[in-house]
Image (cartoon, rainbow, N blue to C red; front, side, top):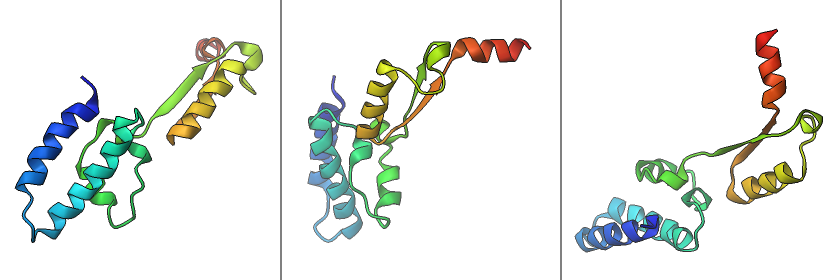
Length: 115
């Protein structure tokens, strides 16, 4: 089941229980609404624009797709320094998602560990 469907039902319950005069609940509800827009588009919640004031409340939502992501690309020895076509595609995707990307060569790493 897609994450946004689960969140949609939680959002309904939350919005119904949100008191009109509860400013903190309204702020949290606004954060959820903005994250849901991205989730419905298949994008990670970490792309939600969050101000410094909202950051603590956003982290409290504990959205899995808001967690930091690091892509690790295992390439051949010759491509260890600069990467290859596949790792460049992964780097592009990581950049689009606000994630990190590292290029390694497990073969080189394995030899270094045995030395």
